[in-house]
Length: 473
Image: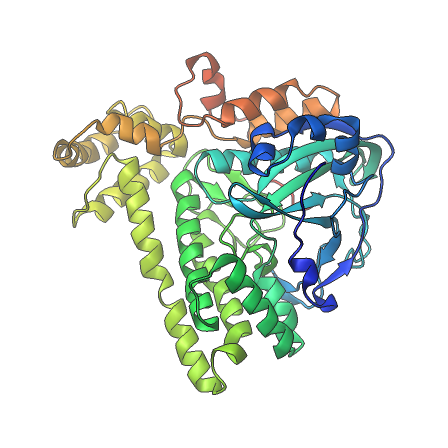
């Protein structure tokens, strides 16, 4: 990898990280390289796909200029406080300056670190392919996200419920700083480090913020927009712990994530979320909960007067509902082909969603069908479509331009459905990566009509349905 690194995070004091090179693997092999992303990072795809480049992507070689490290952070996991987390199986190689600015390059599954807490520091093939597919699909959908630069096999096995093939994901992010990064220092009452981290984040992500309060306001706004975008495509993150909320406003850490098939607001996919904490409909509230932990960490920086700091932070947090609702309405108006705002739009949108829930209508296919003017095949309850459609059609008639094209641009035809991802993983474990490449290519054009690949728009059958996904790699 011929890259020019500029490792600003590594220039922070030593308590922010542990210097740690990746642990080499036995026999690395390239599964997939994201050529377009490599070019955005000013990296040469041919170099990355060479044996020398694959050695870097596998952690066998540390490129010149890199400063490999594991970041320290803490966090609330399913509401429970964990004071010491950190990168237990990920190594940040460093930062490069590309056409879209500064980006982290991280190897996920690169071996044990001081934060591994008894884990092996490795990843198995399934979660690596899942994160590659879903993160790149999210990017194609226009949703802020970490990206996948490459996936490689390691030639080694990792032991989970059984012996499974090992793999490493090369992940790219605006940064890997999380709410939990701030919690780490707040819990230790290290105000100096807390201030250094806040200054660093302001410089890197929120340069117009003049102080910690304005930083909080910026993160609240970014997260309100992000969660509304998740909701607009039926995405369920599955594990919205504070260590999985990126300060940059990107989606990060694709563990037990999934997209809705049938619309069920209470849907949960995570195998360990037995109480529905991170259900689809709970995601906005959980974002506020996480942001409240971020605000609590920033209190010493907001004001020396604790009571005054709480008042100011609370006012900043209270901006979330209106910001979220405005973005949610804008996105769902677009899904219905509506441009300008009208007073009754929220009731119109909710009327459709209620009928979809009652009918167990497929989320993606129902909205896509609106571009043809008729979703009655999906909203199946007798009379449900007929009692909603006239109001929508009357509202749509007031719009100018090609509303069908606008709806197609807001409603994807193809999403990374869970049963398709499971098919990809099963084939890959058996050595066949063709289904992975096929699905990855289709997901790069989610808004296109792809009639030759219509089987990828089909919801799962009862036999294919994946009810749970699992956290961890």
